[in-house]
Image 1 (tube, rainbow, N blue to C red):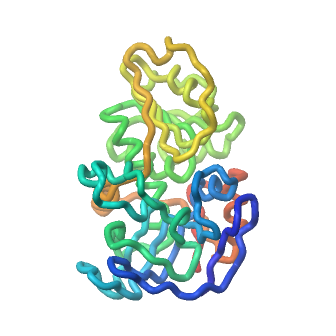
Image 2: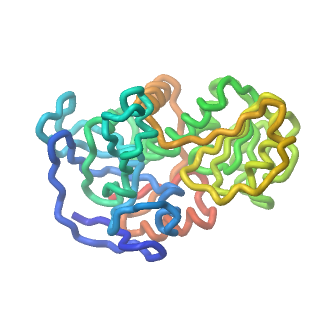
Amino acid sequence: MRAMQLDAPHQPLRLVDLPQPQPDAGQLLLRVEACGVCRTDLHLLDGELPDPAWPIVPGHEIVGRIAAIGFGVSGFSIGQRIGVPWLGWTCGECEYCLSGHENLCDAARFTGYQLDGGYAEYTLVDQRYALPLPDNRPAAELAPLLCAGLIGYRTLRMAGAAQHVGIYGFGAAAHILAQLLRQQQRPFYAFTRPGDLATQRFALQLGAAWAGASDAMPPHALDAALIFAAAGELVPQALRMVKKGGTVVCGGIHMSDIPAFPYQILWGERTLKSVANLTRADGLELLQQVATHPVSTNIQCYPLEQANQALTDLRHGRIRGAAVLLP
């Protein structure tokens, strides 16, 4: 099978011909229809994530059809459309797994990082993390929901019932989250890199109450700020924007060091949280929600062989919404 493989950090992906994998017990083999390109893939490429598997086939926003079923798997059928998220395997035995917090499992393994992912024609998935997807939408439109959508959804959940929500880093996750916020009639405020007028216009088109630079003052105090950019310096800025009792949630897997900040901007019962991965419940809840309240994904598609170009475009801010690879 064709696949785009990363042999080591700071290198371009290579188009390789790999043996088609076969499902072990508890696994499904998927014929990949589409795979989203995520900023986490850039962190992998840049060597910023600990303990990766080398070489690795990246990609963790996978939409595919079941091509083969491993021993002991039930509840799935050949040809069924399945989504594969970032969290790919957990031990099932630790206190986190047994309490529904499998996203915190210390033995967890991740798709496209420690398990081969979806930058390929075929991939394997643990049946526990195979999410049923509808047949009535193009695969490329569904792919960003598997990470950008899920992480955005969990990040918003961790902000509670916040009414006025700031979003720092208006990319793939934010453009999906914006639609959920509009459906819930919660005003949101988009913060971008200074001078990024194109992204600010994109946010306004999606219904933002305001869009401006990350160091600008919005017209309304925030109940919560959600940070999807990997820039640690945004944390103190966001804390200054949320009112007393407000919440700042860091939604990424990686962030640069947070600079020292005065206790005064945390004081007032402000809360600072991080999001760690996702749970099966997150996936099922989000997909159920978008089935009844659809969201659209703004996508830019690339052939599988152009994965390096897609990653470069993402790095340089040339993607409005999400990039998707098609095998």
